[in-house]
Image (cartoon, rainbow, N blue to C red):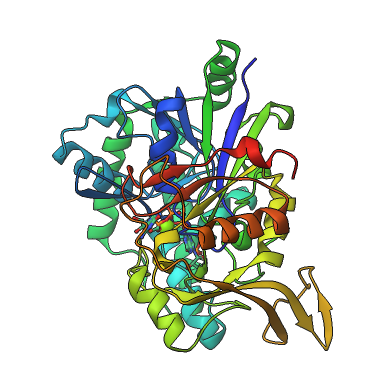
Length: 429
Ligand code: GDP
Ligand code: IMO
Ligand code: MG
């Protein structure tokens, strides 16, 4: 029986997951999103066009793959409809390639209002949420109040919707916030018709049957390991398990059915929203990373905070996820740097450690190793081209520090700007 390969982010999100899922899709029969919702923004580029997906798996542009939105995902039907409309404008009929789990939970308009009210009430301590209603929707899921995609087909759907909306309006009242306006509600109810055009399935037997039939599956994660509800920099995290185990619960595949775990990381670090970030740069170098890397959020347009690569954090994420191969993204962003720093340890209360402390706050001081930049334009590099020696050293250093081979070096946003590495040479790591 085949196994499910899992692709996920190892940092604070936006590592370039969408691009790599699109690159890898021809190798797979099924692409399945396992958690998160429209807080995600997954960008892919090909033939000069840029696409940003929020709910739909990044395999949607390849004709032969089936895409699945798993039970662990939360769906805002309004955003989903917009994504479908955009695909249709580009001539893609997603109804033929996309199936949705009946067990995925729905984001109601009142969830979005609650997200905004909760953030406003937190003041300076706010999470920096994308305000898409993610937290309140997962709270209703675990609180056993949620409404699932399959419920829209049942006769008592409207009664259940009204019951939950009224509960939310009471909560909004406590915050002193307004309730759902009629127009917003109508738009939401209307957009459920788009969902109904799709095959709504029990995705767990579907995926397991695919495996039994010898089909290959790639599970696509959203956000990043350092935003995981259990293992991220709590409370500045999202509300789902973004780590590999989330693929088991978010798709209904058993742990022993997991195959390769592909860990995606940027050659440096970014974070959007609040929370600790040990290697964050507040100087010209940080600005340079932001400008060259176009580090503005795909979902909210917010400026991303930038800093150097953080090996202790990367190793923590590798450990939690059981990463078997690494993909290094946005390598080209470092093309013009004379020197590149890598954080290899933290100084916490005067002590050097390579472990993640319980509280990753400002008392954590990064310890850096300085490396020579390659000062070469990588964006035109093709597979088989000899990489600059300084870049080879950078890759080798990361492989040594993590014990995991780097199988892909990404040198630009386009599908074609992807250098596949010969990882057999690092098998002994
Ligand atoms: P995701 O959420 O992990 O899918 O990542 P995002 O799409 O939010 O952010 C990654 C951004 O970097 C997008 O704008 C991509 O087009 C872009 N990108 C991906 N890989 C590369 C790369 O290797 N080089 C450059 N310069 N940009 C890249
Ligand atoms: P992708 O899949 C980067 C961040 C938000 C905020 C925190 C909580 O594109 O990598 P939420 O809306 O989930 O309540 O926000 O998590 N965040 C992301 N940051 N990429 C994402 O997704 C993110 N999804 C959420 O900025 O700090
Ligand atoms: Mg993103």
